[in-house]
Image (tube, rainbow, N blue to C red; front, side, top):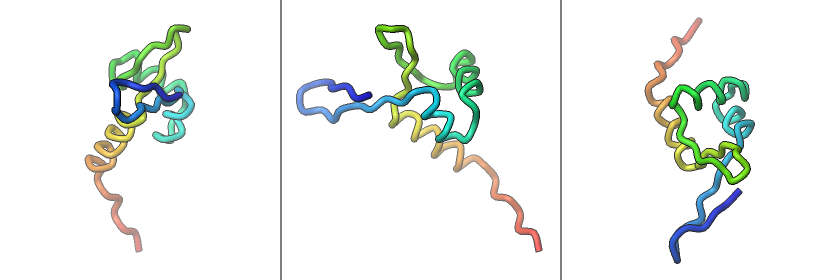
Length: 75
């Protein structure tokens, strides 16, 4: 789903709950819980469905990777 904003602005792309779940490698139910807990920003469509801005989700994924400690190397 893509929407356009102000004239000349880059269109914003939105993801479904399943798309977000795939990116975070979790279940769609986990995405729904994170949304209820206020951990994921979203917009509501006219039909009442939640959509997640691709750029905001990408930033959250990047931050989660930066804060995740590296796994020790096992020999």
